[in-house]
Image 1 (tube, rainbow, N blue to C red):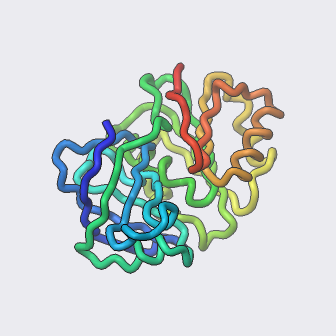
Image 2: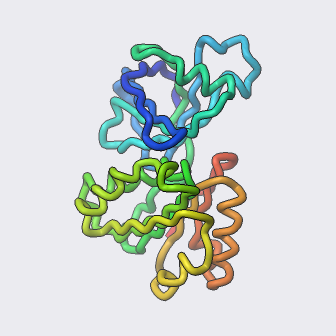
Amino acid sequence: MIRHFPARLSEKKIIAENTAELTFAVSDPDFSFKAGQYVSVEIPSLSEAAAPDRYHDFSIASSPLNPKEISIAFRISKSIFKTALLALPIGGTVNIDGPKGVLVLPDTNVSPLIFVAGGIGITPLISMIRMATETSLSQQITLLYCNTSKEMTAYAEELSILEKQNPHFVLRSLIGAPDEKLFAPYMQKTSKSFWYIVGAPAMTAVVKQILKNFDIMDPQVRIEEFSGYLAPLKI
């Protein structure tokens, strides 16, 4: 159920080059979300601004097991919205609509999952990985994480720790654009796997074409481009 509620900034930090994470305390006791969902954030001080500058959608990066706070992460830019968001003091309040979105884990945990993240597209996927680790989910998860540089790799240290904690999670990082060489080792085990691809439209288009080249069918592939949202995954 989508709701409108206030949230108070409790922490902000830099998690990679040109990348920030903000954590908000949620006062609404009825608020909950699923790993992979997103919220719309509105800054009260921008209430007179045009709609594109007044609010923005962000995937929730934190685990749903603690719905009393949510974390979002984003690349820093000089946009009106992000400048105001980063200037928000600790204790400052934003308005949040959510949760929204259906890019969530399947109801069954039989099929292996292969996550492909491009840059900040890691946010909904790390929410899933955090939850899977905290709940000892037995489903196999492989993350193929593409970035332009090591410095731009968000959550790099935490993902390495999660891989050590979770015997069912495998991390594979790539510096550079995704290509068939990266994916080839996983193609022999994909007859029952489901793919989650999250990133910029240009990146997701490349990955989708690579999967088609390996005869991975559309029903096995879920894509999130931060500009549109999907029908629920059915197995």
